[in-house]
Length: 479
Ligand code: SF4
Image (cartoon, rainbow, N blue to C red; front, side, top):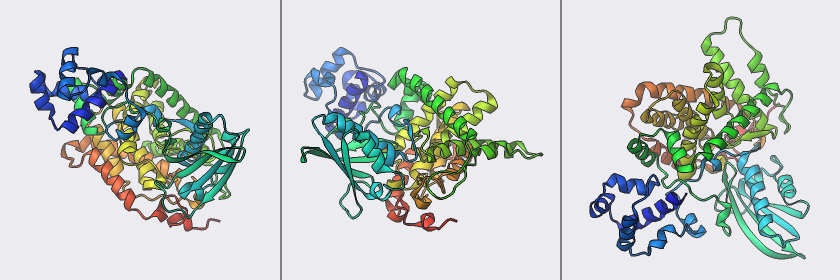
């Protein structure tokens, strides 16, 4: 972590001074690659060079080691990225940005204001619209219990910074003590205007695939090794817990039957898909049926409020486990190999989360399912031991062919089309890896570029198609 704080401070100073890595390297008598490693947290300069750097940038040596202030961290992104533990979160469905994010914010605010005797919450945008469908008011009240919390919805406010915005107000004897504005940016992540620490600090000093690939090539690392180098061994242990939770969601979903809650009368189908073997089933049909059964299993658990892993969100939580579990069942990959694949897919999810969005209400379903598909494709690429170029290409194909995908679930429930969509995206991830393994030599578009396009496209999509329950499929009446 110390390396990373140094890297963020050093990179910021160098960029603002306009001095190139090459010039700095020449002056200090080191290669530009060495300077690049200092900026990416892979290495530290010698004590002598740190003294020289302090002189060049006219700061005290202590500046590099004083740790990053909260304000400095919050103004720094997107030059860095959060831990993968901020991407993969275990929680209850059905919507990470509408249920997990608000619940976290309420618990954190309650801890910040132990002097309050009651709270109020005002919900805006998509959070207000889907308050009833996702029982957000109940979740907020239970997060503040046993203290009381009044929940209001305001669907007319237009000056909100994000569709998933809400205010929390701490009160004492009926008077307002403090009001904070919170944005739930997807996958359970939250940002707050008053408390930057609600948001996790950056641990990766870079936020583009190009820079990460540069480090991996320089150090001869695979992507999972880069993750371990930056985050330490502990992240792999956490990813093992994440994988165990994903497998539990699949097992629970395959054993479950009945109708999903919410009134649409949608039947749980994972068990049926898993068991319904054709007499003369081809291996391709079996693969399709099994992968889809696993994706349905997790997505149905999510839809009924079960425990899932955000990958990158609750709504898209079925894609990554489905493809990895199928491969583990079929080819016997160990849990340790799956964990490496999760780390690889996590880097891709983190890049999208940092540089674009993983929120359906901000950028449509391309941001959720498209990202999940890209994460699954990259993870599979690691399992199949593809090289860095092919992994990048697989992830790029997966996002590119979800561009423009809208988010318009019927009744605002994460059921139709979400559950099938997880299954279709899981199969598409397999297809993307297969194409990438044959064609990477001829590719023209980088992953970083397509992530940028995804964001632009998402911002251009009409708000009717961004989890408002007002456009597209959401207008259909179901029997
Ligand atoms: S349509 Fe996509 S983005 Fe929207 S709720 Fe369903 S899975 Fe999430």
